[in-house]
Length: 490
RNA sequence: GGGCCGUUAGCUCAGCUGGCAGAGCACCGCCCUUUUAAGGCGGGUGCCGUUGGUUCGAAUCCAACACGGCUCACCA
Image (cartoon, rainbow, N blue to C red; front, side):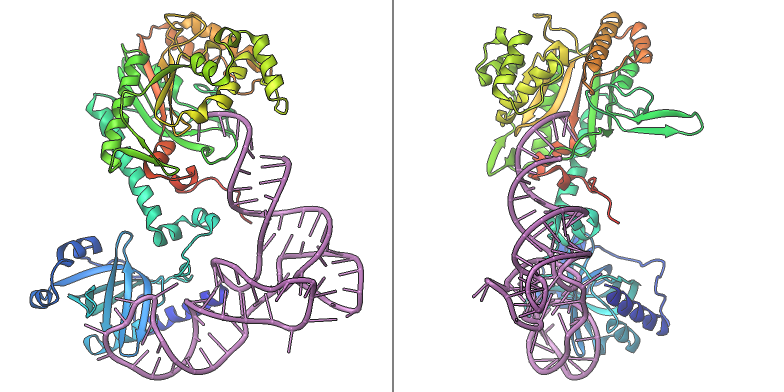
């Protein structure tokens, strides 16, 4: 590696000795490779010869074939590859000397004319060559490419240069977020940004990251959810708001979890969780039409059609059906605790009744929800920010959407009764005292907002990374995050 | 955190029951004016993850450690 660096540094010095700037400031392009291919790719060899079309373009050398007085290269511009051909008699002596000092990985610009080789490949016959930047390191090996997962994530730029699949995932991610934005803008939602650093972490069940502000000398928490701030905005009269941003949860890393992840949360006054589920269905349908060629998610050799309306099944009904435990038994804390002791003796007992139900749901139900399914009416004990169900006060008007065994969305009719909200927070504090580290804390600032009156509203959060996984067929969340968290090296 | 697997050249990997460190690509030198996994001739560039142990002798066997991967458990 140091040897490579030295060899290439020598070449740069030789280039400078030829009077070139090793790091020039700009290069005037007339087209990128996609445009050139689009414009000339279908033309015949003779037609191109007649046209004598001049172009100026630039890219990174990804293949280099020196053949004496004739040199072929493939350049890559971040999207497409294009061949260029340097012929000794067609360029200045200096330009040809420059070619001899090039390495795979270097960035150059060329001016020339478009033609087709004997084998019919669209190629640029170079008249003028501009050296633009040196690469001191070799690119990944050309046969096997870059397979080392760690290097793919740590040096994502190499992954992007070498692997078209990776580029495709992130183009898709960009497009998905763009569509998501326009979906909400079209419906009159206002995009907002709320704090990422919270004095009190809230809005979700999770352990936070802690940081410190020096001037104020206070600890702050990286947000685990924007929810409590977005609802303050509802109080302030912003009737429809959404935010696309990062959340941070101090938890493990897995195929589906990265400590920082992107969510869209959206809230709308005067609607309830049924309206919200309708909206989520509409959103997923629109996104699938834009991003999935056949309207179906590809997951583990399976095609999962995105075809609303999605089935809606109540949490306790689903849990009873999959666990074989009668619904009324599931409401009995002793019976549930006994079931867990009997069936999952190896596992640590969940600290609270709510956590026990969640535990069983994760074991029995979650993985079975492959086709898009709304699970509704979560127990109140694990839904401290949701309005109670109109039908059963033990339950709430909350839903989660599952696809491919993954939780994708979580929404509810927002609890707007400040006195009830305070009681719910206090219940959470008791849970915390019983060992539930993810239980929420009392947020008096939020309660003060609710005390000023918040209209009925529904809100929902959707995990963008997981959505991108589904829409791109990625097997792990690391594949859809440009720089996933890894243990630092050295 | 538990279980399984791995670590040999810049990359991808061979290296058997212990006996001189290997291949392809990359790289370096030379030749080559339509090549494309270009080709031809020549060149091996190495702390065999680390530290101990067994042995006349260890890349190879044993132990511990480090790093990485897969997987299970938890959080969206």
